[in-house]
Image (cartoon, rainbow, N blue to C red):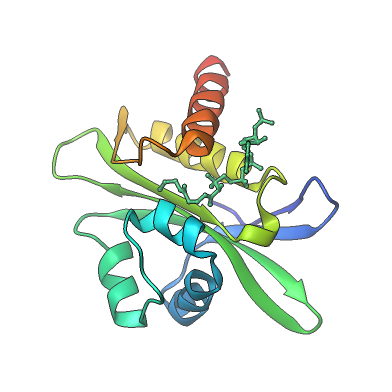
Length: 155
Ligand SMILES: CC(C)(COP(=O)(O)OP(=O)(O)OC[C@H]1O[C@@H](n2cnc3c(N)ncnc32)[C@H](O)[C@@H]1OP(=O)(O)O)[C@@H](O)C(=O)NCCC(=O)NCCS
């Protein structure tokens, strides 16, 4: 996947690119900036904070991972504001899915863009199913997933 520049619905400029091994401390910083509600929806348990070691274990679950991050520039600094990934499971054609957008950048179309990219990449890689657990109260993700996957399926 090539790096892509995109604009969020508020005009913010964002770079979407493959995650790299060197991103782990920026990803830990992102996860530690999340509100407790957003962190709960992603991890499905309450955590006050997360260490790099635990994050690596959580994100790099066994299997092949395809992960995209969203990066913005704040002054001369670059900051990661979202992570979306799938992990190919032991069953062929299936993958587990996870996505999170930093609270201040939610509702700006980023989740939709990143999920569309995951779906497109998964389709080209022969993944027929995303599997995973999502909290039944997570209406936002269910809405996003149904809307995005329906659009991707009819492209
Ligand atoms: C789910 C999540 C990734 C969506 O990211 P996002 O960047 O806010 O998504 P988008 O801006 O692309 O919005 C997608 C849709 O959800 C809706 N939506 C987003 N946030 C919403 C909110 N707080 N309340 C109601 N609807 C909301 C949007 O209106 C949009 O719907 P539309 O396309 O019909 O207008 C983000 O809310 C998040 O990080 N949640 C916590 C982690 C999580 O739940 N991950 C999924 C399980 S792994």
